[in-house]
Structure formats: C-alpha cells, structure tokens
Amino acid sequence: MTILVIELCDFVSYPTGGQLAFVRNMMKAFDGELALVGYSTDDTPVGEWTQRTIDGRTYDYFAVSKKDITSKKPLIPNRITGFFALKRHMKSILRHKYDSIFIQAPEVLFSLPDNVLKKV
Image 1: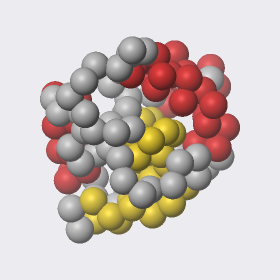
Image 2: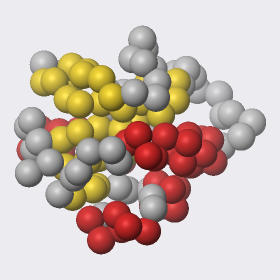
Image 3: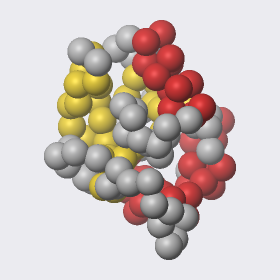
C-alpha cells in the first residue's frame, strides 16, 4: 500500500504546531509506506522526486518550494504561496499511483485535480 502525504511543512520542524505533530505521528505509524510532499528548508532539491532521510527512515520526497525558517510573517501568506507551488508541481507529484492521499489543509485540497479526490 502506498500513501501520499501532502503537507506544507518540512516534516522535521517547520512550521511548528498541530499539523506537523500529526504528520510526525503518521510517519512513525506507517513506516516505509509514505511518500511525502512538502517544503525544502535545506538542500533538498525542489520540483523533483528524491530520497530524504528523516529520523533514520528514508522516504520518497517531493519539495514544492524552498522556505527559510523564520519567525517573521511573510507579506504573502504561506497558504497562498503553498497553493500555487502545489498547482505548479501537481502533475509531477501525481505521476505515481497512490492507494490513499492524506491532507490536512484546505489549500492542499483545492490544488488537487478532481480525478484523485476519491483517494483523499
């Protein structure tokens, strides 16, 4: 079973909060079955599938954009920039087949094409 998790975070520490905590628990529970889509806050390449090791586990990882970790609020909210980053890369993200897609945010839902909504 292959599960795609689309969450606009880096899956390590950015941004802090409940969505990140929930995804971190999913990563522990579904060891090896997850493909992750999120942000790059390090040298992870943007716009292509790669392997990324998080907490000693290796995941298929797709970064939709690069974010700097900062406490300042951006001029354009992250939900808006995240939506457009997801839309730009959605064909590449969905190139593989997934049994289920997990999301937690409305901007992610709005960026998904209609033909995959039954898997969300």
